[in-house]
Image 1 (cartoon, rainbow, N blue to C red):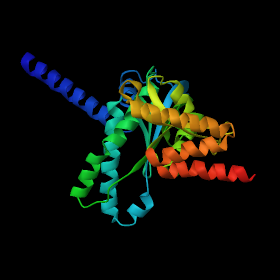
Image 2: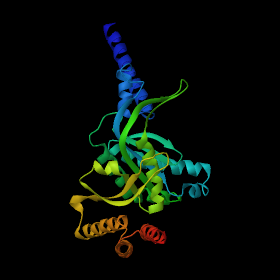
Image 3: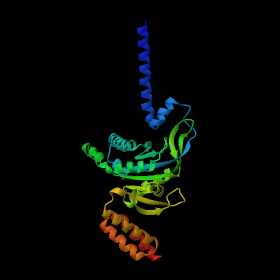
Image 4: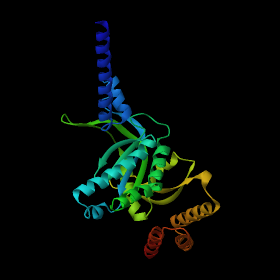
Length: 296
């Protein structure tokens, strides 16, 4: 009897552990994994009102998604999107980020929530650069399956946000809201205009003194009154070669001359950068802007 009772208790315990793990895996598909563990261990300790936190947000979006989707059947489109979401999500998790949501063909990822982080800006940028650097492996899988390849634009922003449950009595969603979220989404859209893969906000740049950036422009994004200075990340200062340093210096002198109204100097430097560095379409934007300014 004692042996049978012990066996019964052991099997019950094993079944409970298995069920807990199954619930945790399911829950972690909807909220960050660390939050899922906290919900299970201390359900009353989880904040239901949200907290303010310094975070970094990454928006990743497919370039030309509508045109691609029109060439695919619904089944092919689902397969194509699932591969893309899995690829981006794996890299986000590798760099200690959390997937906030999928929106159409967009991925929103967050660093610094739900767990605070001192390296959220660095981790977000590393994830964005890894997504772009490793996209060839994803496109190889697409080609093997006869599906169209992908190109992505990424926007990254840093700043305060409210973190926590948001929704109604019918459905709640753990998410982040705030100016930094809006900025990241708007910066991602600017990658098409400037023909660069990643655009980072000035607040993110301020958190990353060990990285090198190329200033792109200062713009007022939709839904925000204060302008944002946009930058393209180029890599770590430790890995920068002499040629890259010279080009960055030339670009900075060209931007300074343009701001000062020294049009001849700016045109000369931008024209040289257009031929030697690129992307040519971005420097064409600067040259056309100077041409218009001269007519005023």
